[in-house]
Length: 209
Image (cartoon, rainbow, N blue to C red; front, side, top):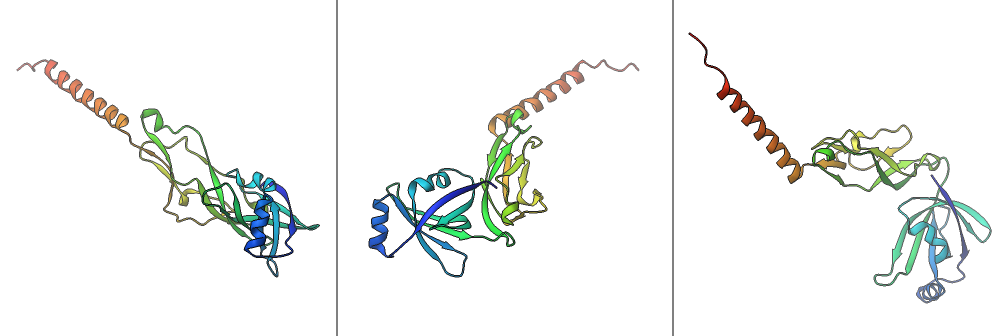
């Protein structure tokens, strides 16, 4: 999994008034959990851009007043109207302890069902996984080339020795649905087949007695 470096500064005071002041300075109040005690700090919004405007998940080298922590961004709260970050939660991680994160799904290939009029439906764009930080993938890669009409790939179909998939096994990730065009094509093919059989029957010579 890709890594990024973020710098923060310890907060000298807490509370709504201080948080409002930080936001006016284009900084976000933040907390780092996972250690002995939570660490309250502030981070520049410019530093956060590389984390929040992408579907990817990053391992973070979080530097707070000269000390570096390994972390992931766990949650972010936005203002309901303005493009302002209200608060960010980070989780400190250890190399020997598995963590849970949502990893984006990456679809590749051209499903054979689409060639006959089917429609590709992506139901899950992120999957919840559990793994050691060093084993976390950037994306969950799924090849749909072999999917025909009415077929799907479920969570249960995914296999990995290092990653545990936490979503329900029966959840459909991607499928090829039958469309009106596909039904019409199938109906036309069936009708053509019936007509050919009738013509063959009519043209067959009578047997001689």
